[in-house]
Image (cartoon, rainbow, N blue to C red):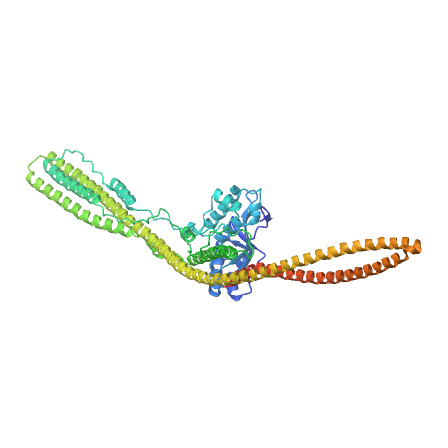
Length: 621
């Protein structure tokens, strides 16, 4: 991925963080896609540059209208994310974050999740020694912050970056990082009983009305009695409200799950498939054996059983991985229904409560104020009637006391009314807030439980289907192993027959070697006779040179020589005949040995070919 390359700034302000589609593969001539582009912001005017919220709207509409409806993948091209250069606001630079070969798939979460996963798994990024995880995390954090601020994503739709240790471990082990949105991570619902009690206690402290301060006055005895009566009534009202605040309704806490943290990803990862394995004899299958050995069948069956168990284990792992991928895709299609939560949180219920309480207490205290003023007026009239004879100064004093008492009473009752209104409003708001929080947490907990139970149901169904599949494979391998056992026994019997033929051939070979020794003896005798002949010929020459007295001996020697020549010719003929017979027997022996080696080699290669065919057949099924 390229880093820090300058780009031209679009004519329309697209924000401090934007997207640019490079090498676009989107079929903009498609009427459906063309209509989506025309209805989504200013994409038609700023293409290929887009705002983040426009890219979000475009991908969501393509996913809902095209990908999900048709089941096809919609290609976009390479999406590069740009930001304004802080040193030169007229220029934009690449952030290094690129969504290469971007496609809109039916099961895609959003383009942020796809981009982050692709960047973390990109081979060039992992092999770049100059790029540290700190720099990469800063770039991705800025990307996530811009997606929330400018793209319109809530935090629950965005993924959480892995720690540096997990990222380094994934790079070292060449593992694929697959992040999910936070809304798919189901954590334990926090108990609210203790929290509600603490909030209620705080509300008691804050909402308890302060007792009004009573000031002393120099009123007359009649006015003092009226004021004392009103003060006692106010004190009783405050005490009643204090008792009302102390009596809080018991809140029901949500029972939390047994596990401290349960996530959908860990639940899917824990999916396992159990299978059966073949029992093998305690024999070293690595030892070298030949078909004529007595333990040949047991050793070969031990090898076949080991390979069958290995195949069953590999098949089990592949089936479990396939079902984990299916569960991940299925749970990705489950979307949270937050409409009830949103409606509950968006409802303005405090204003009607405030207005209702204010109106009710305003009317109540207005009537009480009128009655108190009328009582004071009556007392005043009675005092004036009784004290008409008193001095004008006493009358003025009474009027002054009347005015002061009216002002005190009005001020006191008004303050009590305001305090009680505020206290009751705070009490109702606290109770309703606790109730709403409990309802929200209960709804979230119910949604998490629904997801968890759905995953568990799919896991149970997957395990049942996988167990049936592996049981069929186990039965098929059992019949195959029995057939292989019969083949090995047949091969062993044939090897014993070949061994018997080989023993016969060995005996024939020894016979031929004995005959060959006789031929060598004849050759040695032939050489001796030839030496005798030469000696006789020498003697004949000497005899011919001698006198006639030796003529008779010479003739006798000539006859012996002729007889020796005949014997030598007979020996030569026997040697040649025996040599030809030995050559024919040797050729036959070599042909039999070659056939035995070819048969042995073919039988050694036969199990590997048969296992290769069985493996291909099981993989295809």
